[in-house]
Length: 324
Image 1 (tube, one colour):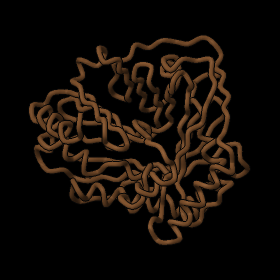
Image 2: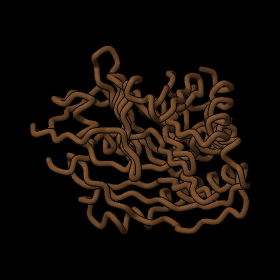
Image 3: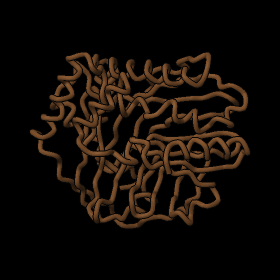
């Protein structure tokens, strides 16, 4: 399906208040949209805070995961390309991502069942996503976004103080908040930052991490459902996993990463006939010819240090399990 067909289909389903599920890849080349009642035949299972089509199952076996990190020199090459573009004024925040081969005793379906996250998605045997990050929520004609920038291991000495007082993390977070405010202004009015840089803790199979988010809100016109496809298209790709300014930054991402992201860092969500909820497809494991690949990344700014960013992409290789 083309993006144009996606927009038309979403508008039609929105206008008739027909519930549907959607998945849009980062490049917007292969979007999917299906009525909610047909997901099982497409082998799609999802679990959101207020909606799910998945049957809960407990996984008894102990979880194991090892990985083979990208060589630091190869990451450094990508990092330096990005830093040069930032120094030249072509970007001031860029989310650089890398693939990491992993080995685990769990299947994608078992990871889907065992992981604990706000937003979970399993697409057949293609990928599993256990995302902590909302893209947008719409309810009562209000649109909300919760950009997430800033992560640190809880076990680090003075971790919370380090995270909140980091000049680099503050600059990165403020850039994303400003970008998302501008994005929402394309489709809504009266944009406000209603919560600023609050901290959440995420428990993982290898310990806990802190991460910071903000809440941004706007007011939508009446009958926004009639143009739901256009609304989504106008604010893509998600600012938190691309950067600013968006168009040029995405060009640099393609130069540095040298491969398509596909559904990783795309968005997925559902419309229930009245409200909409959606997530950014991060914390993502894909099946590449029977080799599991964990995708992770981090925001690069003028203040970024290569070692810190390299360690961050490795820190994000985790599965959030309730029990170990």
